[in-house]
Image (cartoon, rainbow, N blue to C red):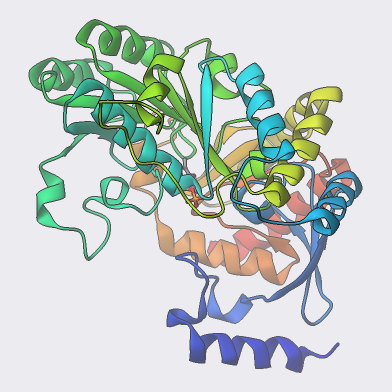
Amino acid sequence: MSAAKSQRLLETAHRVMPGGVLGSFTMPEESNVVIDRGFGCLVRDADGREYIDYILGSGPMILGHTHPRVVEAVKDQLDRGTQFYVLNEQAIELADKLVSAIPCAGQVKFTSTGAEATFQALRIARAYTRRDKILRFRGSYHGHHDYGMVGASAGIPAAVNDLVLTADFNDTNGTIAMLERHSADIAAVIVEPIQRATLPAVGFLESLRKVTRALGVLLVFDEIVTGFRLAWGGAQERYGVVPDLATYGKIIGGGLPLAAVAGRADIMEVANPRRRGEQHVYFSGTLNGNPLAASAGLATLAILQESDIYGRIGAVGAQLQSGLRGVAAESDTDMRVLGDPSMIGIAFSPLDDPYDPQTTLGADVRRRATLERELARLGILTNLGAKLYLSSEHQGHHVEATLDAFTKALRAVE
Ligand SMILES: Cc1ncc(COP(=O)(O)O)c(C=O)c1O
């Protein structure tokens, strides 16, 4: 393959898509890539260049790309049909697996994307509580819908502002005060248990649990990133806090479009279309529970359940985190290394508090973009606005190559 291929594809992308991108993640122009294929923790671009991949499809590929057992499961399903709309074995089995794995799950309902899952969880919460408002945290991300993007996107009706209250992550007292003031109107608190790369302070999630229960407000954990990543039982297992509802995506679809709302059976019942006499929450989507994505999810979860992947990712991720802290200390920069070993945050920030969301919210995005560009040039693919995602395929020698690249790339940032 020649460098001309990437160039030609990038030119076409710019001509036919706004900004020449798929979503909102824009690679620096000088190091933009078009991916041709992935294997393990590596991806290869259209010109044949290889990268160690820390984007991992934005998180789903916890087993790395093209894991043989996931590929086999999907190929098998391809021959049997990809989309039926009605019940199929794979969807039922995946739902059963989710209910047994997720602490809060009495029942689940599938969507195709994480944004749909959080949107529907909030609608279920409003129907169940008969209240209209939600409380979320500044700097969180719950997908592209209006409730998730208030204040952060053009095109959102001003009226939505009145329905969304915003508190600060890890500010227990401020959040409780806001909840107590508005509890008669608040249907749900939605929270990422690890908000982007900010860890929950000891007691924060527990306090949310306690106060929401006391006020009749539903607690929704957005586990689209943390689900089946922090542990088999996600953040609920890690932190020992069980919400009323939780949303899942990314890993449960094994890299194909699939997400879900899980929750207490009595709450999920409001989305039961067989309910007579009472209006139910309309919850449907053409591709929801399609057998192709469900087969990829089932294969992924089977591998996660039977092997010590969390131990491996934890060890390699911890090696990368401590190595990066060493590299940062040697450099002439204020690069901070945040998050969890399985999902590592990077921020150039005067603050160095892993529990203060301001460490990332107030960080310098210009130097972050320079670092990202230099890393890509050195064969390390990252989305530093999100996190470095670890997979079971990242090993010690990948970590060493990554630390070497960070050392060199930070010189350009200096
Ligand atoms: C915490 C969280 N919630 C929701 C979403 C939205 O998921 P999707 O991109 O599948 O719509 C994301 C996506 O990155 C996420 O990180």
